[in-house]
Length: 104
Image (cartoon, rainbow, N blue to C red; front, side, top):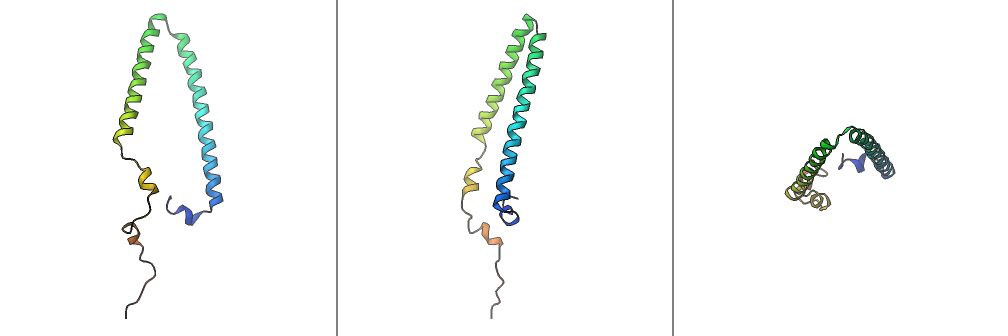
């Protein structure tokens, strides 16, 4: 769709779609943070003092693993931004034969 989009839709429609999904993402993220906050309150109220230390250690371990995986992914995966902004090469444009020419 990313290559066919400019031929299928108009720029105004694409801009409106981008604005909609940006707002939808913002609202969903906000709702999820509220739900996580409400759940965290409930869990914290039910913890005893001995469970609190175990919960803190578990949270710290999970946080460290998530950050470690993020950094590992960040530094080991190839970046796609360079390939998406590069001009098309002559090899990638070779599939389009253009107008048919008849040789005499």
